[in-house]
Length: 302
Ligand SMILES: [Zn+2]
Image 1 (cartoon, rainbow, N blue to C red):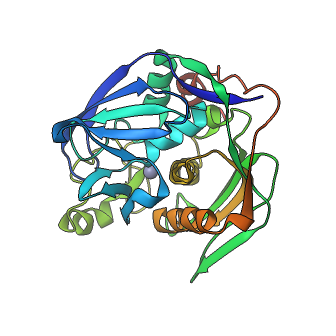
Image 2 (image 1 turned 30 degrees about the horizontal axis):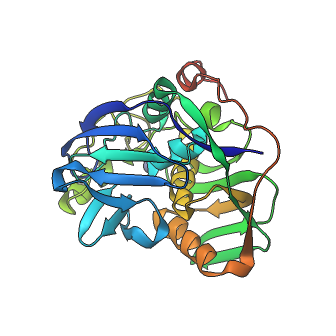
Image 3 (image 1 turned 90 degrees about the horizontal axis):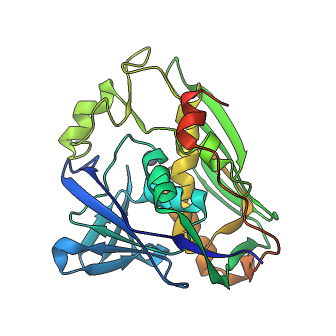
């Protein structure tokens, strides 16, 4: 039976928030079975916010959680790393309102988890297994989830840029391939949109160190880690947003030009309709996540 997992020891990092530009220190700690992922604001008397759908607040360029007026912003890359590494339970302390963006991917979080070590817990992990399909459309955006025995994602984007255009990436996540194919993919933005976003109070912490900067016809801070890094990053974001289900999902997710708002809308629709899914346990062993995300991505492995 595949059981719940937590990390073995506490690990820390510090950085700045992508949107707020605020300096932040983060500490990941082990947690008991059944805890889930819980954020704790140490600058606000240890106020806790669970990483679950009911606490989703404002969602636009990033996913933010809010509980009684207290925010935790840009949760998606860390939550994605937890799913990718098979971590069910952890406490994440922050001394500011936004998670550190680090290099713009989930790789630094994966490396932290690897450094902390992974510990199996006694309780069997409960998966959310889709029994029926659910499709959502919004203009030309689409997201859906279909019944399947494993977790897989197929994502398509169509971005009007000579380096991107239409990209589709399909990956099975249950077998540990997250580390190799997804974790290293960085967030991206264009020079052309920069001022408009800054005027909205966004990307104050953005730099060429933490995102791929697109120019009109190329990349300012290449090389890319993967030829199709952009769509892989969308998969990374989707996995992080779907973590707000509070359980690992068994199903095939298909997305086309979706974003944080549609990802989180899918999560709340799934949770609202209990005829769509059932809770199951899974026999067997969790796949070992032994591949070094950094080595693979640095080698340009596809
Ligand atoms: Zn992202």
